[in-house]
Length: 615
Image (cartoon, rainbow, N blue to C red):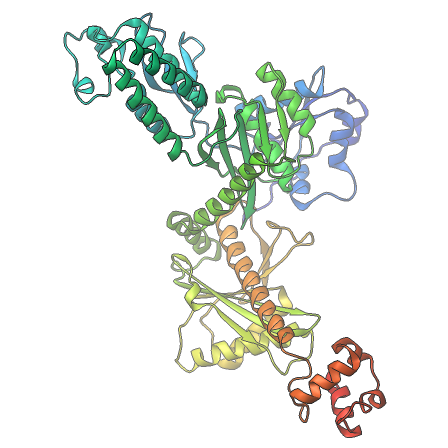
């Protein structure tokens, strides 16, 4: 574990006494003068003071405060200006305690050139202010741009060559031969007809397909009336192709531009998915895995992400009219004002939507969950975490099999224990096991842990079953001591045991690890890949234990409480239910009342009463 650096002396009381109450941006610096964190505030004095209160701070925030040697501020005229400045500073300074968006690549666009007679449609990365033509997009990926260009080439036969190639042609190229271009380079098409195709291509990119259809139908009718049947046939083919493309569109809506943003987090990793909608058409999605160090909820994380995503300097991202979000944002109104100011028009940030937009939002949430699951399961991610775990625990090699145990019950009833297994490829679900715990005092988690570990590793001690290289116990020193006792009683000495104890706040990143061999407790940096792997294993054990417990509980509930009582057959059960009206009323009844039911004697009534009251 890294050693703690010497805590810098910062007289916050003296500093706060002279700090202004105006809006602005504050920068926290360490003893070396490096930026730790950048934040914005409506009232600088109140906001900065909150970091130095006596209680209520998270562990991560206290760690940040302990490193502060100085604070610099920049006063602004409004909180909106402060938000814009904050995002630019985060972009340029990249402080370690701010959420950081690593993917700075500009979105790809389709560019309609400014050629006087015969413009072209081409791929462009980023939106240049110096370009005189028109940009359409942004698209989520270069593949989405090329797919759209391919469709446009089939529908409208617009040239996609650069000007130097176009200006030096003396005969049509292959694109004309395969009917993907009208050969404007040798003027096989008039500028007027070509401009009509350009107008239709622009309308298509804007999502105005019905208007294109009306234009083409009118042009086909006019050509037919003028007896220009070949031209009418070309319009007919365009109409048919356009209809075919519309049928292939998976998601259509009434129109509008929007970005739909959903966030999910698990095992110490945050995933944000952005679905891009332009002209009512979903163009595709992009996903991000921003790094963060401070303890924040989903709303705070998403607010920080959106600020960097749209406002951080040279990102060159288009701000749509609507931004739909999956969680409530603490500063949605402020963010809307800042985005409106940056875009030069009104921008709405909201999550309470209905109809088609609600379906978009649900789609974004599903994409975020699936993307995070895939990311956590990817071989590259798993291998990187395995290496980090090996180094953290100082193991000789990467563990080939890891097992983790957890206990689940409801007020001590229906206790089960889970055993989940991870190998070098991640979760090995075929080896997951649920153990029903019997003969243990209700609520005795230590006894339950002793039973499941004894049952699991007795066979290992006898040379049977699969032997793990590392075992995690979901719990603190008490649970770990039970595991150590079981291993010692079975003569197992060469399998490392690690306890995973939740912190005081019981939030991800606050875990304390306990080594059974040295009895040492230690914490790991919240952004450590090794900790993320341990969290993943622990969370999977917890999830599987709860699933097993619910299945056992539900199975018991489906079975009549009267079943299994000796002497109470189907007829007596029916008579009891009919007499009392239900199992709850039977539980409330005394032995004497139960004995009043036809066929139920006093002895059987006592047995029924005892069974219903666990006596």
